[in-house]
Image 1 (cartoon, rainbow, N blue to C red):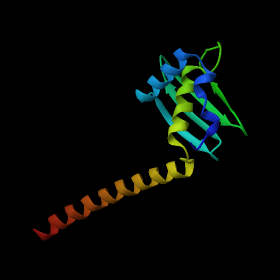
Image 2 (image 1 turned 90 degrees about the vertical axis):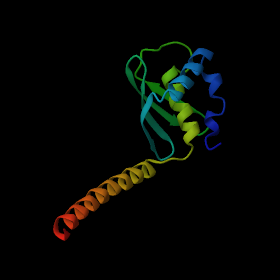
Image 3 (image 1 turned 120 degrees about the vertical axis):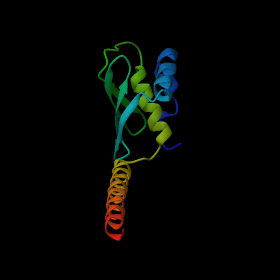
Image 4 (image 1 turned 120 degrees about the horizontal axis):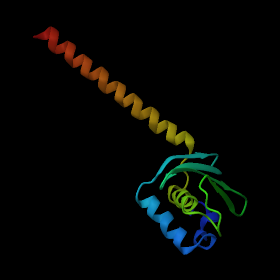
Length: 126
């Protein structure tokens, strides 16, 4: 496991919040996932509303913040969802996310260029 900080995640929340956090993750309710320096993570988690969640890995533990109104014991379900995503994704960095976006954009531009060339070829060769 890349982040031993998250090994005992289940102990930092209620059973209900842990299960609901897993549901949010499996329902693809988490978006805008970002990682900075393999230490700071953020995402939006959609429930009844969309909440912003932050997670910081410390030396031996982690801290989490959420914009939801939850004020009881342990992590809220949105924080659990982000922590599980971090645990699942392991070492994806913001640089890798940007690289994927750039590759997708270049591929899209290449396809547009290719279609334009085919159009011109057909227009002038016929």
